[in-house]
Amino acid sequence: MSGEGWKSARNAAVLIAGLLAAWQLLYWFAGEAAMQPPLATFRYTARLVVTEAFWPHLSESMRAFAAALAIAVAVGLLIGFWLGFHRLSGEVFEPMLVALYSIPKITLYPILLLAFGLGMPAKIAFGAIHGIIPVALFTINAVRNIKPILIKTGRTLRLGAPDMVRSILFPAALPEIFTGFRVGFELTLIGTLLGEMFAAQRGLGYLLMTAIGLHNVDLIMAVTLLLVVFAASVSTILLVIDRRLHRYT
Amino acid sequence: MRRVTLYRVLVIAAAVLLLELLCLTGVIDRLTMPPPHRILRDLAVLLVSGSFNAAIAKTLTNASIAFGLALVIGVMTAVALHGYRAVRETLDPLFATYYAVPIFAFYPLLIVLLGLGDAPQIGIGFMLGVVAIVVNTLNGLDRVPQVLRKTARIGRLGMIETARSVTLPCAAPYVLTGAKFAVAYSLIGVIGAEFIMSRGGMGYEISFAYTNFDNATMYPLILLILVVSISINAVLSWWEKVLLARRGL
Image (cartoon, rainbow over all chains, first blue to last red; front, side, top):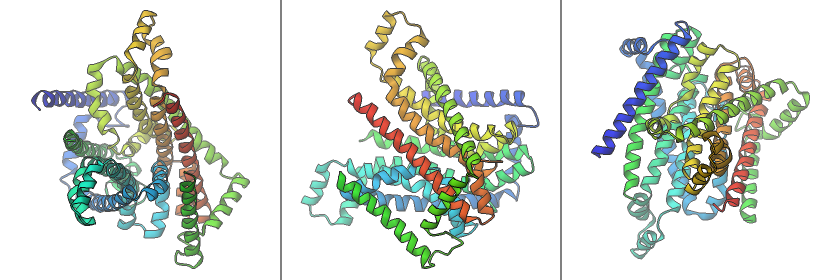
C-alpha cells in the first residue's frame, strides 16, 4: 500500500495541479467574458453552496439520481442473472443489449417525457435506462465466468435456487458485478443530468441551462466544477474498491 | 446459430406487434406514440420529401468531423504518450475517471467559448470520443512485440516512421476498437448537444418537434437515428471481428 499509494497520490496531485494550470492558461487566452479563473470559481462555488436557492436543485438531482440508480441496479441484476444462467435467452438477447448500449439514448428522452410527463418520473426513467444495460452486461459475464466446480458443489449440497444465488453465485460473481455497478453509477449520473439539461423545472442540469440563458458565466463554471468534482471523486473511490475486489480473484 | 437468429427476429417482431396492438387499442394513446406502421410510413414520407436532408447532412457531417478529429488527435497523443512513462502514469487517473464525468456539463462552457455555431457540438463529440481512442491505442501499442521495435531500430527508423510503418499497423485492431467507441460517442455527443441547445441538425429537429407535439416528425427521426447508429455499430463490430480473426486473436 505505502509505496503504491504514495505514488498514485503524487500522480493525482500532479494531475490536478496540471489541470488547474491548464484552466488558468485557458482563462488568460479566452478572456473575462467567456470564463472565470480557478480561484474566482472556487470562491463563487463556496458562496453558491451556502445559498438557500441552491439546495432544492441539489436535492432534486440527488433524489432523481438515487432512485434511477436503485432501479438500474435492481433491473440490471435481474436481467443479468437471467441471461447469464439461461443460455438460449442469453444468446438471443445479449447482442440486442449491446446494440442498445451504443445508441444515443438522449433521442429517447422525448418519448419518456410524453409517457411520464415533465418531472421526476421521466428523469428517473431516463437515468435508469442509461444504467440498466451496463449492469446487465457485466452481470451476464460475471455469471457465465463462475467456475463450474462451485456450481457443482452447490448442486451436491442440494441448495435451492435462492440459497444457490445467495451463498455461491453472488459471492463468486461479486467483483465483476461491482465493475458493472461502477459503470452503471457513472452512466446513470450522466443520464440523469442530461435529462435535466434537456427539459426539467429543477435540478443541477436545469440550473446549468438557465445559467446559459442568463449568460451567468460564474454559475456555469461553479455548477460544472461541482459536477466534475463529485463524479471524479466518487468514481475514484469506486475504482479503488473495484481493484481491491479483483485482487482476490 | 441459425436458430438463435430466428428467435431474435421473432422476439423483435413480437415486440413491434405488441406495441402496434397497444397503440391501436388505445392503451398507449395517440398523443404519446403513434403505432409503429405509422412511424414507418411517416419516415418514408419524410425521407422522400427531403425536407430534413439538410438537418441529417448537418448532423452526420458534424459527427464525422468530431470523429475524424478524435481519431487523428487521439492516435497522435497515444503515440507521443507511449514514449513518456511518467507523463502517462500521471494521466492514468484522468483516463480512468474520464467517462464518469458528465462531459455534457461542459457544453454551456463551450457555447460561451465558441458561440452557438457548429463548433460546440463538434467539440462535445470530439471530447467524448478522443479518450476512447487514446486509451485503446495505448493498449494496442503496449502489445507490440519487442522484436518489431528492435527491427525498427535496426532499420534506423525515426519515431514517426516507426509509428507509421511498424507499431501502428501492428496495433490496428485495438485502434479499431477505440474507433468503434469513438464513432458511437461522436454521434451521441453531436446529437445530444443539438438536443440541448443548437440551431439545427437531427437532434434539434427532434427537440423542436417535441415542443410542438409533432409526433409525425419526432418518431420517424428518432427511428432514423436509432437505425443509423445501430447499423454503423454493427458494421464496425463485424470489421473488428474480421481483423481480430485474421490475427488469430
